[in-house]
Image (cartoon, rainbow, N blue to C red; front, top):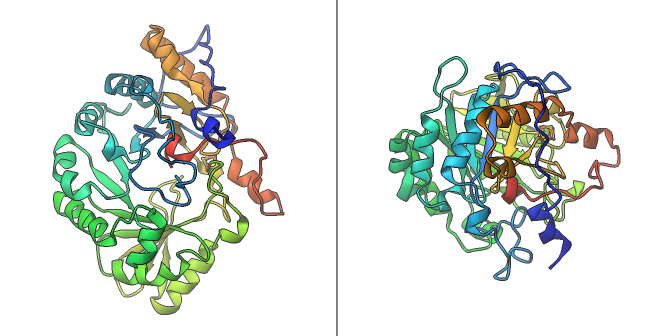
Length: 370
Ligand code: SF4
């Protein structure tokens, strides 16, 4: 077993301490940089049916790869119970991720359970999900019926050969496009389509993708190729800066910048000057947005990560399974967020050689969700 595989299971996590005195959650929790807790991303499976070269490359995630045993995964009841504590601390948006979340059996049941939660202000949560789209045509209606509000679909190319090479399991573009339309018809819009742009691999797809989604209600978002995890062989030379992406699109389809929807929105928004809809760029490498980062991540086996690039999680499952009360769970989550000072991308940007800002080992995206 290689070092990369050991990383995924993050055996270094420990159960967090439960503070002796902690006030009841008020929904106004702040970390050390005064950032509130607003978003929770929950990875509900470490499995995926794609082998995208930047996320779960075949050489690492092969047939001998040891996925988490079912007993390690948080149950739906455990996920919902933990989510309730996060919501009490101010979370308003929950995104289900993976791996491929639609591979988790009976996901609709989990969605129903999360739909019942209410924010501190008594409002329904913004409940969404990121998927590779492969099962969306089949599941869109049942997801909507369960209470899901929106979906984000990952699609890295419109050219079938390029896409099949990137997902590395020969999955066709047409099937993902069918899933997007099914999700739209089911009322899971506005649908965001995420394209990770890797130099020399799919950068030639930027314009075809823009042309395809121009004039549709779907929002195409371009994401700079990131140094997440340890198995994708990241190098700064692989990054096409989002300013360059905007420049290329603008040259053919003029763009006008739009204000963010809310503080902490990861994508910079642009609309087509001709009224043909909207695109976004996520400058995770060239313009760090740590300052407004309000996201926590819960791994498949219940470890809390306060940054996508964290090297170590906090084992909330241990607290759950040791019989701690809701008050104790909320206190532990509160103390962890208050201690948070993560700003990995900013530090990487400061690091002028353009290489990863930390030599520390990172956990894989398929484990903590993107
Ligand atoms: S690097 Fe960490 S702190 Fe910065 S935006 Fe990403 S997840 Fe948030």
